[in-house]
Length: 233
Image (tube, rainbow, N blue to C red):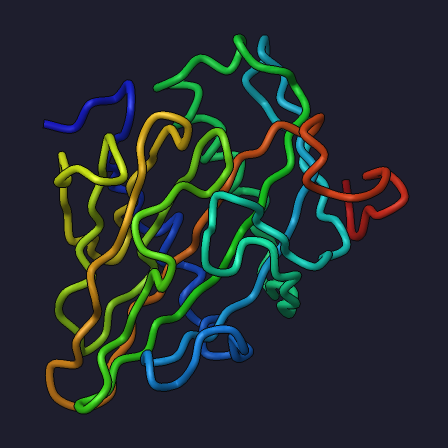
């Protein structure tokens, strides 16, 4: 059974699948070669201030900066990566994310200011090429919490999400996320990994939105959020 103190599987439905159309407009991930199936992706970054009393978040989209993950990603963590900005307004989905995090790990124990990374990622699979969702292997994202949601699966099998308590140990949980489902993890407590995606016949894909919750004072976004704010806030 899922352990809500470390991870939880969620049925989100249309709150997640509604973003499917924009996945057809993603740009190439230049750091994920075609011989590994290839990925297309976009990134959006947000400043959020969560009110512990009202359970509401003030969410502001920021100018998208180069993505530098750090030591949590041993393969590409120290490589500054450029991704085009997500086309959709994800603020309502981020609000949902705060609510489910708070239900599992009370946010009153944390600071109120957060940096939210939202990645749209499509992993491609072809008859002769297996799609590799996670080239870095078993890892953490360097966040406090990570919400990994499946937006669509088309013409593929595999892509099993595994959870580990230790990088060198067998998984403690595994699930094949269907469209509208997600897994939420406490990133400090567990590692995660996804098995290869295999085309069932012709070319297929697996679409995900990965949402990372980072404490703002950790300094993972460079600059004052007010100076970098875009859109309505």
